Structure formats: structure tokens, C-alpha cells
Amino acid sequence: MSAAVMQPMPAPGIQAQPGKLPAVLVIGGAVVAPLNLLIVRSFTVYDLLVGIALLWLLRERRFVWPAPRYLAATYVFMLAILLGTFRATYAIEALTQVLQYVFIFFVQIPVVISVVNTRARAITATALLCLGTLAAILLAYVYRPTQGAGRVVVFYSENPNRLGYPAAYLIPLLVVLWVLSREAGRSVRLMATVAVLIGLYLSIWAVTASGSRSSMLGAGIALLVLVVMKPGLGPWRAAGRLVALLGVCGVIGFVLNVTGQLPHTLEERINRSLDTTDTESQAHLVADRENLNEAGAMAFFDNPLVGTGLDNFRYVAPEYVIEATPQLPHNLWLQLAVQVGAIGTAAFAIWLLFWAVDVVRAVRRAQSLDAALLWGLFAAMAGILAIFMFTPEMLDRHYWLIAALGLAVVQGHRTNLTAGGLRP
Image (cartoon, rainbow, N blue to C red; front, top):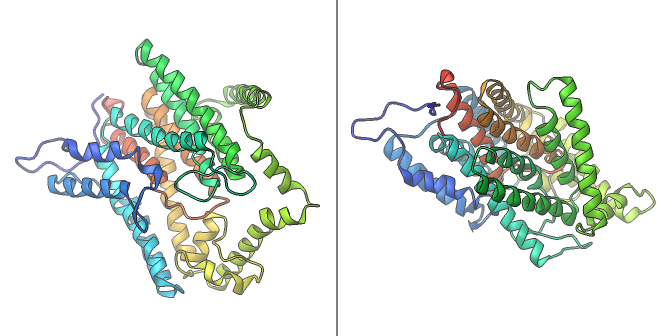
């Protein structure tokens, strides 16, 4: 087991492995990636750590790019968003998001690939990502800060949905970390089991306390993908897993509900959404999103090739539907289509498609440990993308950290297929 991430030959006098500082910054920085600790505007503490690691890697000539097809899709996407910036009502706001995408595709993802070249590093980064996320949820659990209708918020956002969103990646990743811990000693297995059970409870609590309907859907899809849809299961095993999954989830939900361990915020919010006689709830929970989606579709067909510019549709939404609020369409793909145009949206989708195909192929040929980790990352991304069918702006760094970790493991396998996996 000695596969390594694809790297150029080292220059004379430079060590064969990257120095420890980039690894400490990038892998250790995973714990703050989900916390959105802002330094100025959209520049976060995590961005700073990755930026320092970038400089170090460039100095050591250890900077690794993704495969050329990813770069091709990225260049097309970047060209599309730059063209949209020229058309933006407020170009400076569009440019702010352009710079964030530049950081994600040209700094964050390559830096993670450059550093995460062993299974231990990939697992550690995944565990720290979960730890940082759970720390924020635990803080909300202890202090219960609320905003409207009793919905609990997390410290880094005034949007209650942001408390529930992480469940979509936490639940599959926690399950995978527990599976991986089965290879360790008894004491480690016991501690991992307790930690994962606490993490799963906090994840479920976050969804119910936030009242986020999309978080519930995303978490459900992530768990379904993780347990039922793994390549190679076959129809009968998949059906058996589905029945077992539904049974376990039903029992857990029943016990937590009967014992009063979960808030009723989500249940009440869903009931209000379905109650057609409650005009106020319908206007706030349903109609506003329908108006934005209608305005977004009209704006896209008005100019399908060049969009309104990133973060700029909200300024023109009422021009298409008078009832539309000054927001973005609550759907990632419609938001991209209306703001960067059809070509940019297609490039974004193709990048994700490349990622999904590469991960699935690697899962089929990887060792059990690497396959489990890869499939957990795949399920996490499936849950995240499910959420983004109902919310815009996939700019949070921890979502792309998950994508980057998947690429790092995939490239580790691609460079040495006969070795069977990343070295421990």
C-alpha cells in the first residue's frame, strides 16, 4: 500500500514529501473550515491558513493541480462568471464572489490535493471537519439562541437553516469514521462509538431545531446513498439495506420523539408549509420561493448566455416578477443559470460530474478502507447538492473541502493502481 498523489519530480535538494507546515495548516485547518470565521468581508481564517500553505508548497515546488479535464471545466466557468461581471448592476459585489471561486478552484482544491497524500491525512482532515462542525452545533445546543418561530441559529449566521445544513455531510461522514475505527484497538473503537453517537444525535437535533426542511431532505438522501446505493451491492442486498435503514431510522426517531429529546420546530414548519388555509405561512414559506424561481426562469430566458453577474440577480428580480423579494433563486442551478449563463452552469455541472464519475470508479477498485472513505465523501456531496436544490451559493469552503478530499484520494489511487490504495 504505497500509492502517492501524482507529483512532479523534486528539484535537487528538496525533500520527496511536502514539509510538515502545509500539512498542519491544511489538515489542522479543516477544524475551522465550517465555522466561517471572517477576517475581512468573505476572507476567513481558513482561507488564510490555506493561503500560507500555498506559498510554502510553491516554495517547495510541491503544488499539484487536479486532472486537466477539471481545469478545462474551471476555465470555462471562470470565463462565464467574468463575462457576467461586466453586465452586473453592482460589479464589485459580483467580483467578490468571483474571487471566492478563484480561491476555491485555483488555491483550496489544489492545495488540499498537494497535502493529503496518505489515508491517515485524509481521515484526519475528515474527522477534524466533523469536529469543528459539531463544536458549533454543540454551542447552539447549549445556549439555544433563537430567531423567529423558535428556530435555533448557529453563531456564524443569522439564518437558522445554516444550523441544519451540516447534517447532510455529518451523518454519512460520522458513520464512515465509525466504520474505519473498527480497524483500531478496543479502546479506540469504544471512544469512536461514543463520539459518533453523540455526533449523530447533535446532527439530528440541529435539523429539528433549525426547522430546515432542505436539511432534512439532504440528510435523508445522504444516508440513503451511503447505505443503499454503494456500487457492487446488487439489487437484493440494496433492498435489504433499505428495509434495515428505514427500520433503524424509524426506531431512533420514535425513541427520540417520545423521550422529548428533539424540538418540534421542524414538524411545525412542515405542517405550516402544507396548510393551504394559512395564507401568511404560505406567503412566507412557499410563495416567496416560487416568485423567485419564476423571476429567475424569466431572466434566464431573457438572456441565456450571459448572466446578471454573481450576487446580482436580487437587484433585478422585481423587474421580472413584482412580488419577488430581493434575493437569489432558492436553487443552485437556477441561480447559476440566471447569473452566469447556460455555458457557465454547464461547466460547473461538468466539473461535479467528473468528480462523481472518478469517485465511483475509484470506489469499485479501492481497498475496503479507501472505498469506505470515498463513498462517505460521495454521500456527503450528494446530501449537500440535495440541499442546494433549495438554496443558492455553494461558496462555503467546507463543502469544497469535501470535494477536494475526494479528489485527493482518487488521485492517490490513479498514480499507482497496482498498490491497491493510499499508503496509511
